[in-house]
Length: 199
Image (cartoon, rainbow, N blue to C red; front, side, top):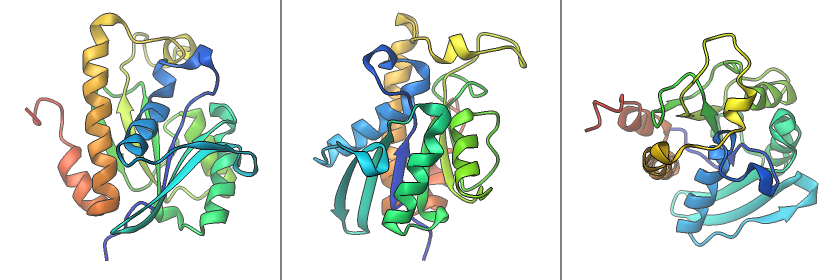
């Protein structure tokens, strides 16, 4: 049977000051997909996260938003993995990616951190295991490679970018639903097209 998502984790930073920032697009996707399934997210101290669970035809799915701040996401994710008994191959992490064009999606079954501090924290917490899926959502880059982009990722989307971002979140929600309905392989084939190919 094709691998499916059982634990869906959106990365971001907690607090009102970070709502709507580029770095929090993972939170936005988890909130949206959980809402579509009437799944409420509630704070659970033992996971240092907001979590919710829903049962679908494919089985139980847990959604989570770590409240540890991005750079320490791994502590929350490893606690969730241990509790759910999910294999790394059944975990889907949703993150922003400054190296992808705004609004473009890329789903991969494994890989390194790509310089993303949230992914790096998770890999370290899992003892170096990189065999978990990640859905990257392009937030674009305004600075050259190698430059400090902390101000960029912690900034908010411009009014001109908002329409594209809303569309990207909705497409990401569809991709997540596909991951636990049809499996990762089907979702990768369906959603890893370049934006111009999807038209």
